[in-house]
Amino acid sequence: MSDNELIRIATHDAKGLTDQATAILKSEINKRGIGKELIEGAEAQNKEYTLEELLPYCNLISALNCPICGKSLEKLNATVTAQTISILIITNYEKRPRIGCPKCLKNKNISAAITTLVLGWWGIPWGQ
Figure 1: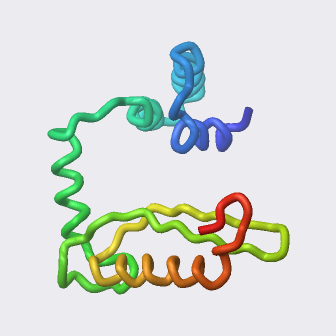
Figure 2: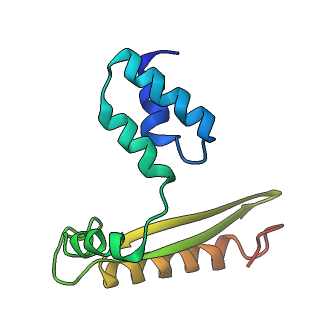
């Protein structure tokens, strides 16, 4: 396995690894000397966080500029938008987490609802 593949696993795909697989990952990272922060990243993906641990990060993120409109007039929020598009016998259902200001999130939800209403209401199995 290349260093890049190992880095990808440690940074993106470590969630759900067994204890044995995590130990092998850590050992290989140490053996290759490609960064102890990779081990911390892999461990962080499998850690259960308390609300008290997450709250400072939530407060920090909510005070950033909106990633959709770029403004910082209101605190950021999060939602999940779901949209269905059906064409003939093919149905595409997309569920996406979104972060933005309340106005932008409302617009994204309305857009997804209209798209589903017009293009996805009759789809099987996810028709609305």
